[in-house]
Image (cartoon, rainbow, N blue to C red; front, side, top):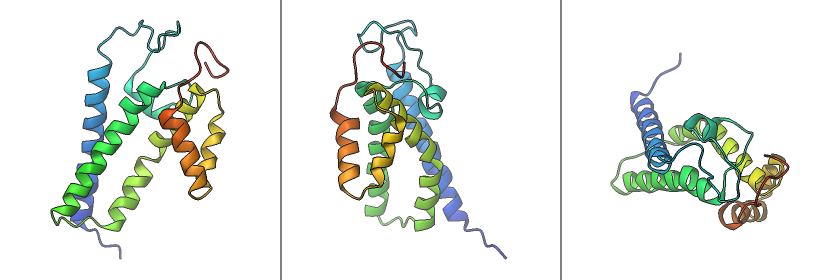
Length: 155
C-alpha cells in the first residue's frame, strides 16, 4: 500500500505556487510594454507571453529576457529554499525530486529558446550532461553571451 506524506504534498504545492507567482510577477513587471515593441532593439518584433516563454520550444529569448524570466525567479526561489533549510524546516529529498520533474519542461523550453537566440540548435543542451565542463560551458553561453542580432536561423 502506498502511503501519502501530507507534508511532502504541501511543500510541493507551496513551492510550485511560489514559482508560478514569482514568474508571473517578473513577467508582468517586464511585459507592460506593447506586444508590438521591438524587444531586443534589433528590428525584430516578438510576441511574448507566459505560456510561450515556459512551454514552447520555438522562438528566441534574449540574454535580458532569459535572466528576467528564468534565472532571477529561479535564484529567488533557491534563496527561499535555503532560507527554509536554515530555519530548520526539513525539506525531503522526494520533494526536490518531484519539483525537479515538474520544472524540467520549463528548463528545456527556456534553454532551447536562449540557444536559438545564440543561433545554436537546442541539441546543444545535451552538452550539459558532460560532468562539470559541459555545465560550465553551457552556463557561460546562456548567462553571458549576447544573442545574434537580427533574424537568424531560428527566428
